[in-house]
Amino acid sequence: MQAVPVRRRLAPAERERHIVDGAVSFFAEAGFGGQTRELARRLGITQPLLYRYFPTKQDLIERVYEEVYVRGWDPRWTRLIADRSRPLRARLVDFYAEYGPTVLTREWMRIYMFVALAGAAINQRYTALIERALLAPVCAELRAEAGLPDTASVPLADAEIELAWAMHSAVFYDYVRKHIYAARVAADAGETVARMVDAMLDGTPAAMRRVVAKA
Image 1 (cartoon, rainbow, N blue to C red):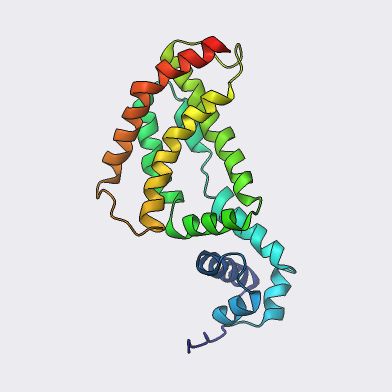
Image 2: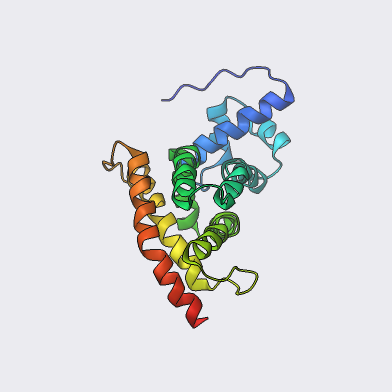
């Protein structure tokens, strides 16, 4: 039987941090179906103490979402994508070189998959964040790369967002293979990202021209 951690006296801010960090690890292993009683036991605290900080399980889930998904996104990345003083390829490679190891961790990936299987809305909220903060700016830069009208003149079509999703999904799936399937992946993640970006930039501008022409 797993030993119960010894409860320590902590300042309120430290205790809350301890609970949130523990909840992230716990839900990554058990999914959001995991019981708060078991979480409290693993943390070495009582369930009433847990509820003093998070009155309901949903409150704790929302905090985990904030911690793992919202705070994991760096607003600087949107500005990096839009910086036309550098080639688009270099911007995309630099972004994914940071985003993958920083965001797509084992805990992040497992929670994301558990939530998707449970049909919760958290993944939809994160998808909306990615489309707004990453994919729409990427599409705007791809338009500029292809010599097409800007998005103020011709609004983005859904098909353009799908083209950007194709590249993003390729990078995402590399981390699925690593953290979910425990499959062998290339040792040099940076080189993998560079090839994926090259594949997108070789074909996407031409596909985007056809999409914009139809629109």
